[in-house]
Length: 171
Ligand SMILES: [Zn+2]
Ligand SMILES: [Zn+2]
Image (cartoon, rainbow, N blue to C red):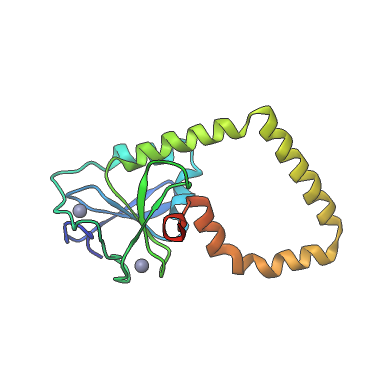
């Protein structure tokens, strides 16, 4: 698998239990589906990855359009977590995502802010109400069965929702 910008072969790296592929020249990183979630679930996981992978030169840059290193589909630009100013390139076909050098730290910062805001009293109240609702649903065997059956169908969609994928395309 080659860097979508520099065309050199990506190097496999292990980080926070994820197997990622990084460009030795521009330090761009390829995340396969769900791997951003894996890395961001670890404390400071995105930032420490940014520090681990450093560029040794400049990427040659392919302009606004990149192709997926995995399946050659055109990558689609979207905003990480919808409202951040970090623009990532995602693949609609395989669910992978290209992250440029420096973007990981910006993602970490945004994620930290979001999580801090999410633990405000008002947000906690919302969470509690949601939990009570979930508790009621738990007693309903039919509801549980239904949840199970749609879980796998929604998996890809949920993942895209979590990383903010697709909102630029839908606009
Ligand atoms: Zn590169
Ligand atoms: Zn792809």
